Amino acid sequence: MKCNIICIQTHPELNKKEKNLSRMEELIYHAMKQHPDAQLIVFPELCVTGYQCNEYFNELAEVITPDAPSVVKMARLAKEYKVHIIYGIPERDAQNPSILYNSQVFLDDEGNILGTYRKVHLFDQEKNWLTPGTKFKVFDTKIGRIGLFICYDAFFPEAARCLAIQGVDLLVNSTNWEKPYDYDMDMVMAARALENAVYLACCNRFGPDTTLDFFGHTRILNPLG
Image 1: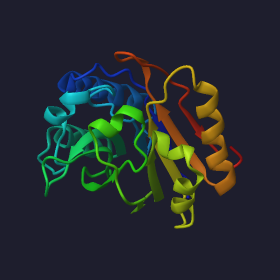
Image 2 (image 1 turned 60 degrees about the horizontal axis):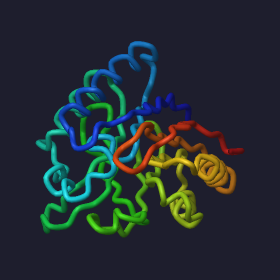
Image 3 (image 1 turned 90 degrees about the vertical axis):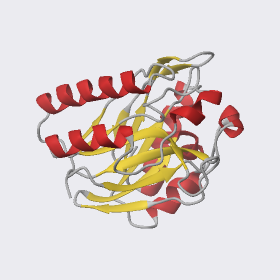
Image 4 (image 1 turned 180 degrees about the vertical axis):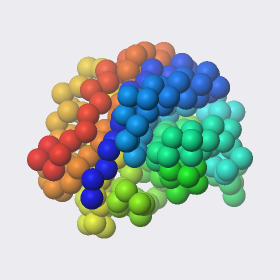
C-alpha cells in the first residue's frame, strides 16, 4: 500500500497553545497546497505546547475528546483536507484528572479520533510531571497499519519491535530530540527501520525552549534505514 506522508517540523512557543495551534493550521494549509495528494501529516512531540512546560503541563493538558480544543481545530483541518493527522500534546486522564501523559493524538481523514498513544519511556525531567503509558498501540487505518511511539521510546529496540511484530506498514515517531545528540537520533531511527524492515517517519522539532535546544533532522526512512 502506498501512503503519501508529510512531516511538518515546527518550533512551538513554550506554553502558548492557541498560538501554536494557529501556526500548525497555517503550516497544514501550505503543505496541502503544495502536496494535495498527501494522506498523512505528522507533527513533533508536544508540538501544541512546547517541551519544557513543567508545572504548566497541568493547565495545558486536555482530555482527548471531540470537544477538546486541539481536537476541534485539528479535526476540522483533517476533514477539510481529507488527510490523517498525528500531533503531540499533554493528555489528561479522563478517569483521574491528576494523571497526565505525553501523548500522540491520531485523527483520520474525516476528523475522527482513531486514538492516542501515551509515551512509555519518559525522559529525564518528564518523569516529574507526567505518567508513563503502558501499551504500544497499532492503528488499523485506510492508509495501512500504523504504529506510534514517541522520542525516547526509539532508544529501546523492544518498543519498535513490539509494534513491528503486529504487522505494521509504518512506524511514526514524534520527537523532541535535543542538541548535541543529532548523531544519536539519526542512528537510532535508521536502526529501528532497518532491524524491523519497516518504513519509519520521524518528525523532530527545532529551536530552543528554556535550557534545551532542538535540531530537527526530520526524515522519512525506508526499510533499509
